[in-house]
Image (cartoon, rainbow over all chains, first blue to last red; front, side, top):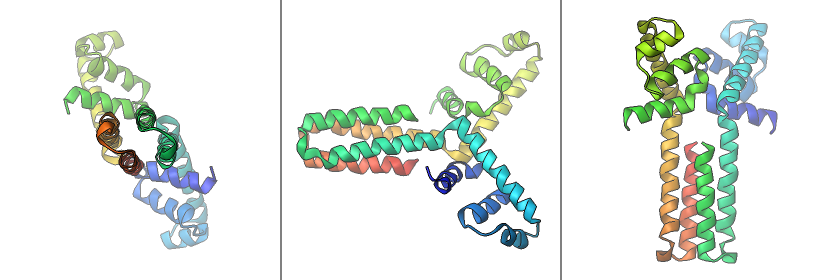
Length: 114
Length: 114
């Protein structure tokens, strides 16, 4: 996965667990792509302080993912929803019973992912 | 939701975020239904200590749910998987195209829940 996409997903799933101050810095630097110096100036803290904060946030978000695996589970469910999408798109080639059985099987796999 | 089911679900989703000591106490008291006194004796701590620990764990787990809503999302996805299950079970009554369209719509709703 591209690094910025991974960071955005981690933030999507665990951002609520950061403090408001951490969220602000992380959003500005990582998601909105402001420079460390710009963010430092606006917040009235040192450039090094912004850098350390971002690094700490990365670690916090990754630690949560190691424990809860929400991003991995989301990717896996997305994959299964895509399988359903392929089946419904190609349903001309399947009889109705087969379509129903395969959709049913995948939908149960989705629950097991969670 | 019945309280014990809710507690078990909260523990399922967020138990990894407790310490090992907290997990042990929570599992014994809440999930395995040992008495406070039994757990206190085995761990060599006071009955009040066990009680306070369980109370603290409840609060930690509920605070995570307030922020991440994993149990609520799981319930919602389960509901949607049941809708798919009903459709595939009753597929005699639907033509194939309708079955495919409705399954497709629900599967996209599942992704949006996450």
